Image (tube, rainbow, N blue to C red; front, side, top):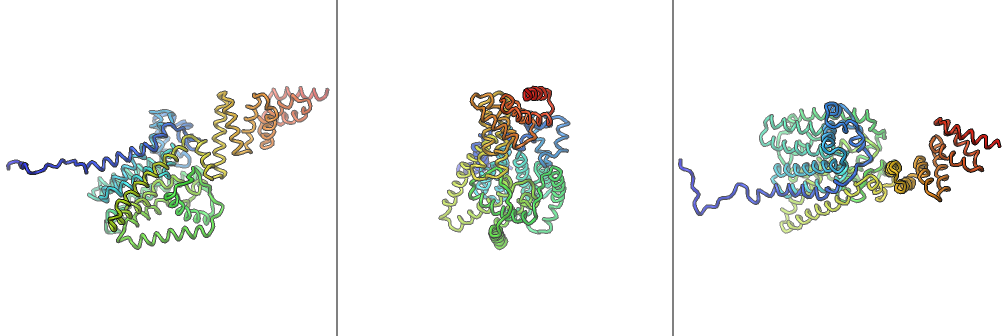
Length: 544
């Protein structure tokens, strides 16, 4: 048969048209926007909260990639979490970049960007709807509630698990196109890797069932559930392992069940509010002593109303059911029914669940534009403005993570004046003060210890260290004595403060008796030959 000849009047259309390039262009734009927001973390330091345990004070990580360190990553619990793949990622980054904190941060950014691209690719493949998919991925990449997960090195587990979550979802969509065991195995592998990054993926099979309803529109519920049983078994094992790890790490908090239920219900509503109005975001939200009945009732009303709407309209608008129950379901492991830690809720817990709410918004906007075509450009403009606003807010929120002092001070600035915020801010300044004190930078150290006492005036060691530093500055003798006395009053068992105050008072003939009392206390707490010699000298002096 002769080859087909193209007639002059025919137009040859290239395999890759301008329209075919649009999806890669959107993927590139997601990566670019992500790095525009988060590129600043390349200059950021570690945070003195969890980062020491995961990276810069962890001897196993700092050993680099060895057989012993790899074995450790699979057999150890760090900060109450069993996450071997996350620990392996820290090993890899340290192997190549040592303690260059900026590179540890940028690896988080890279995984976050890749997760956003995978989310976009998954939604486009499953729905054949480009722009709502781009909106959902854009909100995921740029929303300020996600800053904690990306800008905190210790939250590598979030960005890594999200990468495997969306990779698993993408491979599942491909599996449904051609259901063969090899493709199913890829879904299982993605889930296993995700669970070894963070056990938040225990709800992953549930989201697959939601995807079956919409956008995949698969039928036969019993068959679909049976299909997920191997994945559910994997999640069950991971759930037990996670609970044991949290319990052994002392992370499970003893809070009354009634208060946990109330906090869980109100947190669902709080997260929705933060999504639409992300103001006063902080690293820590204190757990309440009580929650008003009216607040719980309002939250229950909201959750019930949206749930009824999603179920009522699941045939005509199935994206509402998928999005809403994605949100409710994926929050279950971290909503606080089993209370992990002391926080009421946390920004990082919305990292995956927000996708469900974004799906509701995106395809709701599509429905609106189809019903009222004249509103098409207004809807598109609103979506673009939302992404731009998120980009600006996320960039500002990211800047607060440049170091611990800035982060914890921001918590106070936005009104989270609770014990944990004050304590961590004081701890950050105390640690910096000690570092500067040991390196001879006296003036800077004084400023940090003064900041400690502004935030937490009952820190005995800070009073003692500030007094030591001020003693070297002429004209501060009264302040020096006052700080030593405060340290001794706050902690009579602080041997160094007792010794320092005793030695200082020993030079004042009128206060020799006080000096002897403090030095005797210091020697009792921490025996020292020099203190004994000084005591003998003072006792002889008193007899004369």
